[in-house]
Amino acid sequence: MLNRRQFIGATAAALAAPAVGTSQAFGQDWPNRAVRIVVPFAPAGSTDITARLLANRLSEVWGQPVVVENKPGAGGNVAADLVAKSEPDGYTIFIVGPGQATNKFLYPSLTYDPVADFQPVTLLLTQPNMMCVPNNSPAKSVQEFIAHCKANPGKVTYASSGNGTTLHLSAELFKKLAGVEMQHIPYRGSGPLMNDLIPGRVDVVFDNAPSISSHVKGGAVRALGVTTLKRIAIAPELPTIDESGVKGFNVFSWFAFFVPVKTPKDVAARINADTVAALKHDSVRPRLLELGAEPVGSTADDLAKHLKSEMDKWGPVIAEARIKLDN
Picture 1: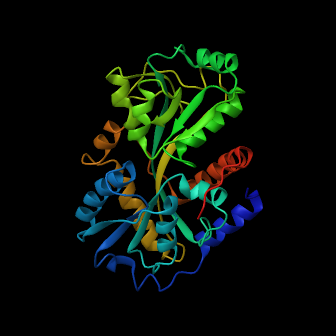
Picture 2: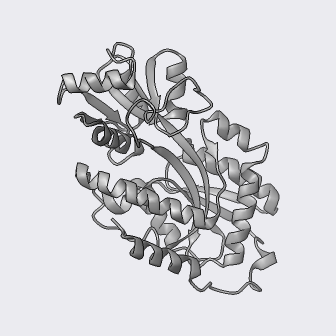
Picture 3: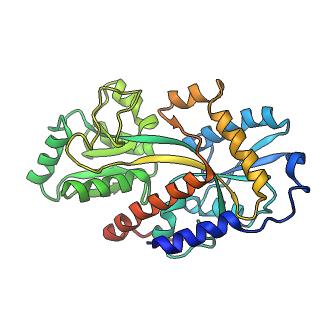
């Protein structure tokens, strides 16, 4: 885990690194050609949908094409390496989520530094997970589920959409804070996972709200709690796991914009201002809310602090659970 001095030093270097070129070279002339937003996953997922919503609006604002470029592979590392080594001219933007905080701890080595090689721009949104069980589960609340785990030590299983995902890490944090044991069953995505959760072949999942809320509303599975500290608009009746007795439990997916570290500060500031405005626009905000996301639009400094807090949270969880992925 990064200590405070190392992180602040690296972040300060990222924010203060001399820009390639000058304000005169960019400034009001930017953008004068197409801008690309690099997505670290395949099309049609939440990251891709968010990128395309923002790309459409930013293209209108900037008067230039904003192209979404999908570069999946290695849990986001392929895209991160590409952006880190891209020309720092403002024409390459990276949309990324928790992997920017966790991959340092999950993989034996990275070809980029998630702090020193990137300049924070803005935290775009947060997105909760839901704790859900099959309808045949004996648990009708978080506390009943904890009791079920303790009555059946080592026999309860949790599903995830893959090793190192927020679904996986959410369950590991739950195990730690609730003092229970569960066995991990990883799947290749949410589709296969749901095929086993609905009939009760696995016992619980901490899935992204946009992915599982339709199954909850349709009665296919039972929701026990939401992973954030506050209740969510799309399911206000659902208690938080924290208020259900697992104090300190606070997990959410998130997306943010980063650019290569030496991108001129005035250009990064322009991207920040226009993106924050786009998140409030009628063509973007309502759609994000429909997906169960909470638009944010932060300062660059606040995003740097957020990344630090996510690293501090997940580093120990990953180490304790001995989660390791191959490059």
